[in-house]
Image 1 (cartoon, helix red, strand yellow):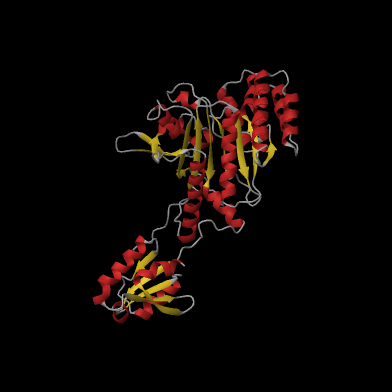
Image 2: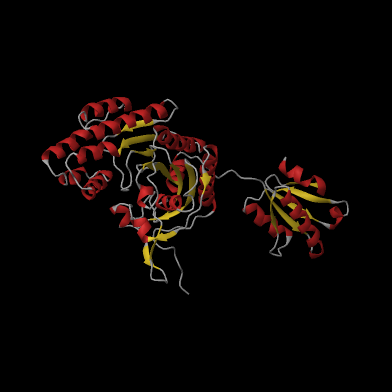
Length: 424
């Protein structure tokens, strides 16, 4: 018989890995609740036309695309925003604004598998739809900050940019959107020389090169440099003023913005305003990112609607926490094995197990037909904390034997006091 392995780039998540992932998602869900975001669940499979509309060339080349049995082109979602834009123009079309929407789940891209990069990976996703004000951009940054802090992650920092600055500069050259997007994709991958080759004029190339030199250790100082650099370009000026407003809001509220990078771009084509990524010293890849996309809802048939959002890479956050020896999801609750010493006591033993479960105790019932010594040995190996041994003599007194497997101690405990004894 063949031994089957997972498809390359896909993984089985077991035990602590699974607990870490679900623990991080739980924290994301708590953050969503604190900020007033309601959860929506969208399909893993969407129409190719939807996902292809504004994904960007890099994402487009890495989508899992196939035909369904109806000969329709469909794809596994490579991210959440297109799906959220779809339901905003359909099911949520008449909902009052702003919409605050949260999603979590798996997404798929045909990348080369490596540390922190898989073909199936998990994201938490937040979208704030209906506001064009800097307060909305600030909220997305601050909830990301809150989420990562709630996990106990240390030393992370934000990198910010603004697509309006770049589009303002390139717009002066009457450059078509396709060429602009090609430049952004190369800048996103830090292939700056390849990006500059696409500049239509020597002047445009020099302006882009000069923009990259404006970084400093002080984010507000960088903003002032950009303001001076783009003086005379109205679109770029408005963009950098908007970035300044956002920065003032988030920095005053403790958000660790380390870098404002004027040449910063992201691979998705739909961004129109502020963009960001968040990093930690332990990884050289972003833990998450996002930005403003004011034209996407309209592209999918809705009314012109401003929006801003972000996604957090759950797998990468888990790696960063692991590097810091922070074990989210590893908090163990007490586990109990309930064992009947003979078959005649199984009904009563199962009643006791069910009663403990109703009291919130995690219970495993012995179902393998093993002798007591073997069952207790197995429970000890699997880090079960207590064994409840249901025997005839104790049961006549409405009691059981409670054994602490770690301490090798046992006592007779009345059944009615059992849950309290275990929990204490």
